[in-house]
Image 1 (cartoon, rainbow, N blue to C red):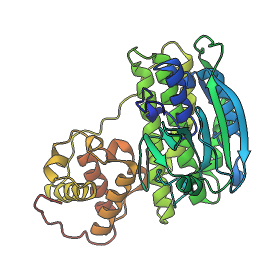
Image 2: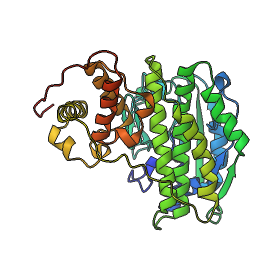
Image 3: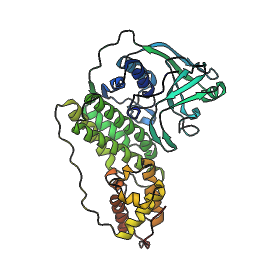
Image 4: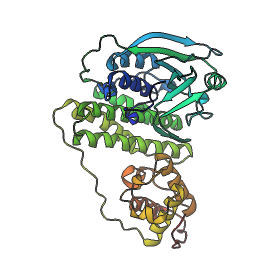
Amino acid sequence: MTDPTLTTDCRLFDCVQVNLAILADRWHGAHTHLGLGAELRFRPAPGAAGLPTVERTVEEQLTSAAPLLGLDIVARERTGPGRTPVPAPGRYVVADAFHLPWVPYAGHRHMEHSFLLETDDNGGAVVVDGYHNETPWGSARPLTRHLTPAELAAAVPEAATTVTFAPAARRTAPPAAVIDLADDDTVDAYAAAYAEHPDRAAAFDRLTLETWLLARSRRLHARFLDGPSGPADPVREAHVAAWDALAESVYVGHRRVARGRPEPTGVFDRLRTQLRRDREVFAATTATAPAQRDSGPAEVPGPLLDRVADTVAAVLGVDVATVRGAQSLADLAGFTSFRVVEIVERLEQDLSVECAADDLVPENLHHLDGVGRIVLSALHAAPQPSPALVTTSGGN
């Protein structure tokens, strides 16, 4: 079995790419994985329910990734149900995450997920999976896991794609940057398809994945352009941060729409803006960083801010002093988009208010006083008398 120590920044990749990146770094050295960021594309294709998608098939990803990473495909097979993949060096498997016990999606969601299926010193099966992400069912982190034959059969009970890779016999020069971005008409049609789709829950559900993929690919391309040791370009970093903020806003919108709450209409204009700025930021030699929003000092009543701090502390499982001392709530352990939704929903339930959908953006949600302003605005807008606010003591 290969040393499981990773040199790969697994946070940069989706669940198909990440284990290809691990193989590349293993065989060609640290930072080879950045080659996957050489290509930046926006060419949406028709998808399910009339919604366009930037998600590429596994076959498309394997075909484009192999030369960028110096990987040769030795064998490729689509196995049927009941045929358990056999562990081997360089063996890469894509199967249904619903059955994979080491990922949070197990038992919750059917989706394609990759892992390396290798052997230990005794010939037993070892899974290496570098996936790093937050999900509604917990965190996914890189791991190495031994499986018995029965556990392996249970993990892959259905059809799977099995590919055997080897290091390329002739390693090519590092890839050059390739930018292939659709025109403004395509950008407008893409955003409009989601903004105007009659099934709002389905549109936001799909857009959650779309913006996650778009944000992650932009961050990877930015890292590729910066190089393994170069400083981060501040314009690109600001643009990537705006992509991350948009993806978070869409997820919050998805959760609210699923509960019958109003949707955040501003996300579609932001989506158009981000896609257009891709050309300015990544294709131009210089670009102007996006203006930073300044909401000014908070004017939230003390008792209300106490109530918000207590709620944040309870959801995250930390003490109130830690919440109040944090420069940003995003610095707190356990603070993710999923916990943001829980914080907002708990405050809405406890205070009998409904927060304005367009206020639920990261610029507000990542700061204690920002959350306080959202709730204060909701209290002012509520038709019923505001519930009494009682100052509470610290603690969870």
